[in-house]
Amino acid sequence: MSIPIKNAEGIRRMRESCAIAANVLARMKEQVRPGITTYDLDQIGREIIASYGARSACYGYKLHNSAYPAYTCLSVNEEVVHGIGSLKRILRPGDIVSLDVVVEYNGYIGDNATTVPVGPIEPRVAELLRVSEEALYLGIKQATVGNRIGDISAAVQAHVERAGFSVVREMVGHGVGRAMHEEPQIPNFGRRNSGDRIKPGMTLAIEPMVNLGRYAVRTMSDHWTIVTSDGSPSAHFEHTVLTTDTGPEILTIPNPTTFSSSLSKS
Ligand code: MF3
Ligand code: CO
Image (tube, rainbow, N blue to C red; front, top):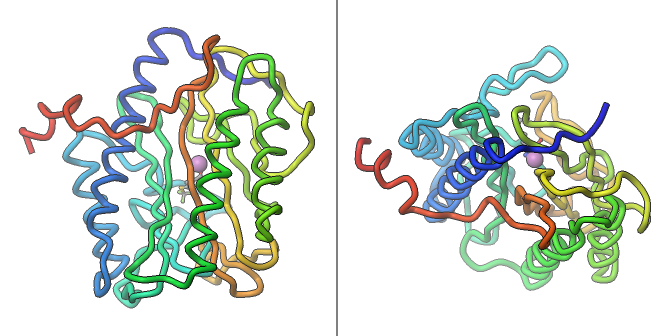
């Protein structure tokens, strides 16, 4: 068991799948508004993914005998991750919604997520989003060659807890590549200078899940949706990052021009 190191070809393909994942996420984000259902948002995601000639890595993904039934993960308010789009879930002003997009293209996977406000939101919830995104970038900053995975974890945890929020313990970030989940696990809590040593050519999905209240979560009866036990809102921000000798490089950056040919075909 070891952490996959991508060669030049693997890195090239990771760049492509991650750019697609980022473009899909950016375009879905534009569609978030009061009145839209999470089912419609998911269908928009399905169409955009198809327009790039990519495949949803979520659709059909199996976890304890259950196949994920949607194309993207859409999690509203107290839903932490893995929410399933539904015609009954109409977004309203004051809600927050996490969009998690995982695509496979040419054998490689790109994974990213963001949480967006629906209309005006409460100040403390706005702070939750700001702090969670900041924690993601502070974690990414630690993904330097010679550091350890625990340096990422500790940076995320410190920033979140300093603001009075809590990090989810039961789900973690992960290596990503040919498979959605590769080694290593990347918890959002932990000790500096612990865990695996970071080397060049790793592709890591760093993804803080942050609760406004306590960190405990539970799984809904749909077997997928994770919610906060105390019902408090939760945020989720994620990038896929390449580790290099000159520092971390975020691969999930939108780049509409790269795929203009596939776009114009659709
Ligand atoms: N970004 C999520 C993860 O890393 C995506 C899960 S997709 C699902 O686990 F299929 F499991 F829902
Ligand atoms: Co992920």
